[in-house]
Length: 386
Image (cartoon, rainbow, N blue to C red; front, side, top):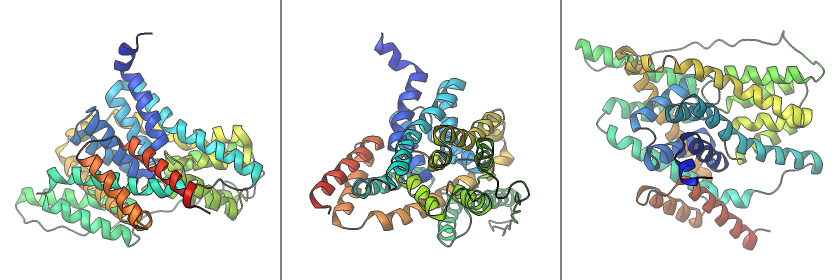
């Protein structure tokens, strides 16, 4: 086999890169965004900063697991339609595999394995990756006072409990109005935009029905198609459908499913894999995962047909710019929340600062830093844990 030629094959590059990322992307969607940017913009140069920024905004505007949709857009940009398919599959597959193992252990032993030691070292690295990404993105946009003001406002609003979807749409609308007024020469004031969110009630479709694989698939397909703003919205869908209405899960199992989603790498939405395994074994895990992520593939395939028109539109440019700055504000808010749980003693502070130095000065891959943090946490736990 000609390994040199294989290493230059774009589809092979997609498979290898997203498989490694899928095993190392701890910390939720914001951390995954930062790792993708560091890996594919800074280190590999597969796309430019503006391309990544636009893809990030588009991924955050459409329903579904946003980090997975960003992976699909990057895969298509680098290797066409095969790149889209393989980027999605190999970004999801590592997390799905880990969750399946945890699901098997949970059903056989009734509890989850101890992982706090490993997370001790991973969380500060995730924090460093987020700070590094925000710094690199802010630098070329530091003179955009309106954009930076929006970042601060969105960050504060997010920490105050405002819905991420409202903040993204509001940020886009405000920047659109700001640009429009600026072109008319009517000053730089921003208007207040309010949104009414309509809640769709699906209670008539199913209540307290016996377990079935097709209905399990539909529950997660609906969640993947309607989930807006954050991967954590999935948890509301799970509780509302599977605990309250259908009664297939208990509250205790729901809490354990959330824990699995938060401590495993890759997309948070592979919580669907864990729930599917608990309810229907391997077939349930497969169908729940397929239902969760299939809408993302379908949505991005449709989106790509319009992406050049959207990015080239002067009218849409202001809206997309506002969404991008709002997304940065959300990243800042998530970074603050992670910092409160990641920096718990002097050792974690040193890990975070060392990781930040390695990223900014030496351009070390975030993937290897995460794995190094896991090793540090594991070694520490062997000597100091109970």
